[in-house]
Structure formats: C-alpha cells, structure tokens
Image 1 (cartoon, rainbow, N blue to C red):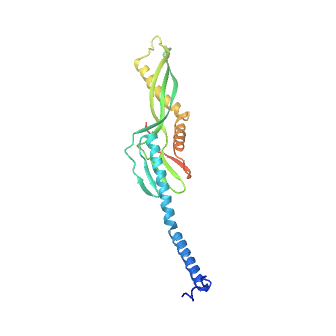
Image 2: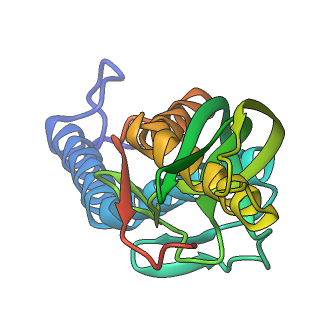
Length: 228
C-alpha cells in the first residue's frame, strides 16, 4: 500500500506533489540555462551562415556583371579568393563629337584645316587594380578603383575646311597632327561631361538590383594609377 505517498482517495500527497513541481521547475531552469548559454554560439552560427549566403550572392552578381569572382572577406576572414580577372569592365559607352582647327599664317600666307570627328568612348573599371568585398554584420563594403575612360573607338571624321595659302601649304604632317588630336579631345570631353561618374553610378545600381540585404551596401572608390 502506498499509504504515505497517496491518500486514501487516490490523490498524490502534498510532499510528492511539491517534489514533482520542484523537479519540473529545476528541469525548466536547466533547459533555459542551456539555451541561454548556447545562444551566442547559435546566433554566431546563424549570423555567419547568413553572411556567407550574402557572399555567395555577391559572388554570383559580380560573375554576372564583370565575369570574375572578387576577393570576399567575412568578419576579417577570407571567404573567397579573387579569380584571375578580365582586364576591364566596360559599364557605359557614349558617342562623342569633337572638332579641331589648325590656322597658321606665315609671311602673309595662311593655311587652315578644320576636322570633325565622331568617337565611341567607353567608361568603366580597370579590374587589374584592387577589387574586394568585405561583408560585416553591420554593412557590406565593396572597394574598387574609380571608373575611368577605358577606350576610344573612331567612328569617322569629316574635313570641314582645307585651305592652302599661296606659299604656306598644308602638309601631311599637319593633317596627321590634327587627326591625332581628335581622340584626346574626345577623351577630355567625355571626362568633363561626367561619364566616369555615371559609370560608377550605373555599377552601383546593377549591384543593388541583384543584391537585397538588410545591411547597407557601401561602395568605396579608391584612387589608383590611371591608365593613359
């Protein structure tokens, strides 16, 4: 007979009830303690897993945009090394028209040459310079060189004026000098019009359209050796 543990009515006695309640409370406390103790590790694991997911998405975005895998760092630890990059990433191109005139007078005899040139100017990034991605819990930092003029393709030129003086004649060197001046003028005009800055803005938009994260995305453009 369980006369000491159970009352005559079949109910559990108060001492046993108190013991069961105490054991239940102790078990709950132990479970809570273990959960609290393991919370930082579990949170860190979940956080790292989320950052690695972002890293993979960024890798896929750059492969799609630039056909290369950048160097990716997560919490100061190298997650992916940069693959051998293509040399250039062209983001924008623009049709630029320029004119240049040679007017030279010698002993009262003047010669005049005026040319008009059309060029396709390309702006983008020299990926042989530093390109890296640092993924942090609070932000994502993408570092790459400033955009610059990468190439100029001639679209054609027109002779607007070709006037010889009586004894001051236009030479082949004169024409060649004028032709060689036009591409530099196109480069300067494209730079002054803000084409490199537009390329940086366009790249930022392309990355943001492909990457959706809670952390803010910060692009840092660094000064590198400019290509001439």
